[in-house]
Image 1 (tube, helix red, strand yellow):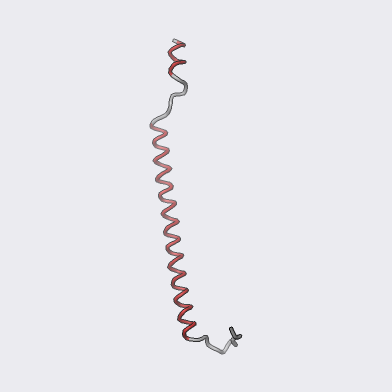
Image 2 (cartoon, one colour):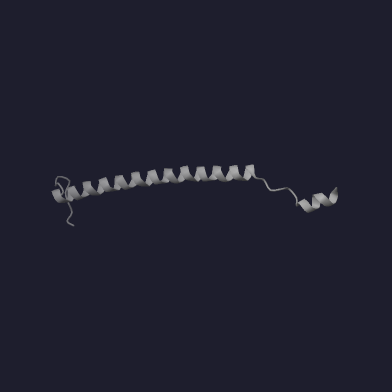
Length: 71
């Protein structure tokens, strides 16, 4: 591309393409942010569900065979 001086305006077609590209970039960034928020949200939900299951159903501290032999 030729060097442009400060007083020269870029080609109208180039300006249109730049505005289009800027809009597309902004939209892609918004989609990315929305997707990342979704990942965080569902990761927390899954973690809560896993934690609740392990808290509600705790395995015995020792096998049952050992407890019946001691009594």
